[in-house]
Image (cartoon, rainbow, N blue to C red; front, side):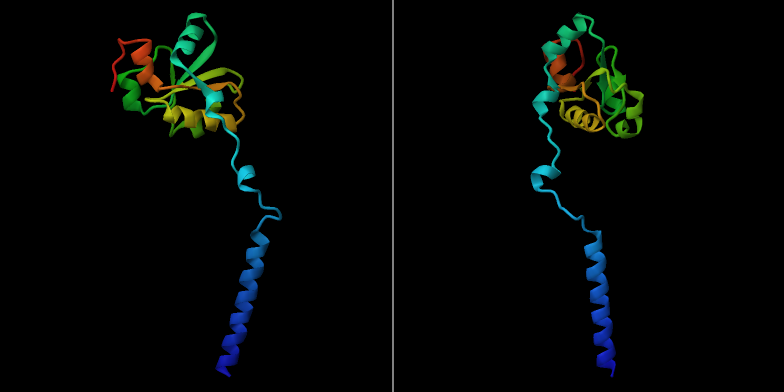
Length: 147
């Protein structure tokens, strides 16, 4: 008798788990290509010489520094707004989604992530500084401290 009860409980449990698992699945699962949002890093990159030209021409751009506070305190590009990469999701509303924004980090990796993130939020005119502030210091402003 215990074997019968045990079998009935197992069947009931399996039926419930299978049914609830099926109900949580989407009706159509996207392919791998559809699941990965298209992002071409080259479309969201700007080289230091081009950024320098834009600054010299007085283009109304927002420079956004996404490095950590200690990095920003040690060296930054004049006129930059500082929002660390970790704070960006919470503080993105401080930025104008219609403005041209150039993001930089130390070597350009975090800024590329930030550009992708902002693009997903609907920002259309965002670019990441290739090579970050390190390359900017090498090519544009050698007076800046490198680390």
